Image (cartoon, rainbow, N blue to C red; front, side, top):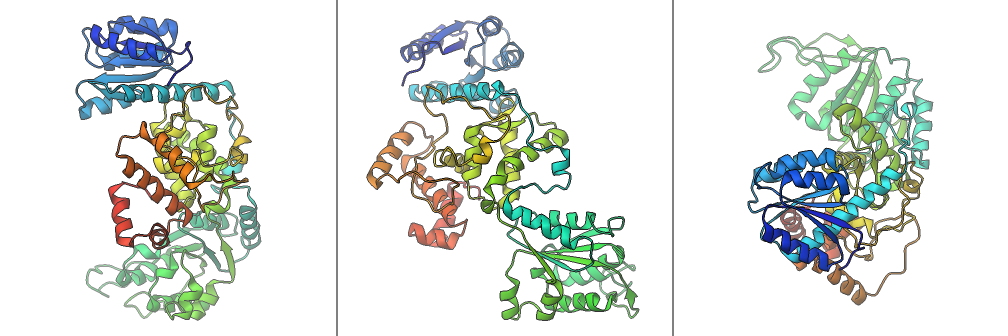
Length: 514
């Protein structure tokens, strides 16, 4: 491995032997090395030379490594600081990352690990530098995301059209789609654009309420109607009289409750549990489910008459993999919201990271994307999310997505357009291209032969893994198979030639986040 001679590295350590050893190793690999024997001296050197990488000892005479790290944040804010310690304690790890260290390494050093870490640090430094060269400008302005629903793709445009058609009327609406696609956001949008917008909007998750309590939750109850009913209580129908009631996951509702819902819709009246009084209610109902209600009707698990009563107008929410071109705008929206609500300073995503986000299959849809964006923004250094900040199973897609896969990402204002670095790729254990059924925007390159693929994979993983080689390969195979099957474990286990129980055990052992 070699690097450009002008790439400078600063070593701050009061142990002359450590400094000498690192100087020899790094110098032999083409780096320009500068040394300092104390934290105070190191801060002065860093302020003058602004080195891309700093190796910093944790325990030194004078100011400590953590104190030096804090000073380096202002003296050389763009340096990637690698903390060196002989004691890999919990406190050291927490403090190192809290105060902005790129990583930390435990003495005695493994040369290959040192060089690999330097490569990754330089890659991160250069990616951040490229991102800073372009002035940041948000994709969306306040008018674009005031509804909370982000997307300009054709599937989302169809959703917006139907919302506009149904909002002004009082017809019931059925919203279908996978979990995490934003069904409640659509329901709230319909409500805000309706003539009921000045009245209550009440959301009920039917799957989260026990069967013996759902009727009381919806219709209320009289005092003494059942054990624990110590006073009269109004239900959701009464509470949102004149407004809009959103029943999420209605496919999980028991048949007896479905009968009462049907009566409330047809007659516009309800009875509290344990009561005889008929109460008139004027409620607009919006329902949502991720289940196949037509199949449930056939299997007598859902009332046919209620199904037709609910399904007057249907809105189908597309999965995120069906509208990949919306990913950059969604990410931008999420980062802007994080900046406002949680004081997170990250403002953008690098080109490579955006390509990975766009190529990933997203079995958890927008909800999963939001979790990933939050997690990545927390661990990112500086104001840019890099590929290394993404979860491993998503970062792997940076090397499989064609460079034009993120056509939407390339159009993102503020995205860096600098050429690739001269150093090696810094992404952890990123696999080389393999056959995958995961849909990717853009034409795929011709697939390499199986032998060539594994030869390249072996070479790439050999010096860049913290786990066993077989375990690393197994991890990547499972990730790819899950992506190809949309997260379906039954299909994935069949594809990999293992039982479902074995697959689930492997997923748990490898700590894969699905």
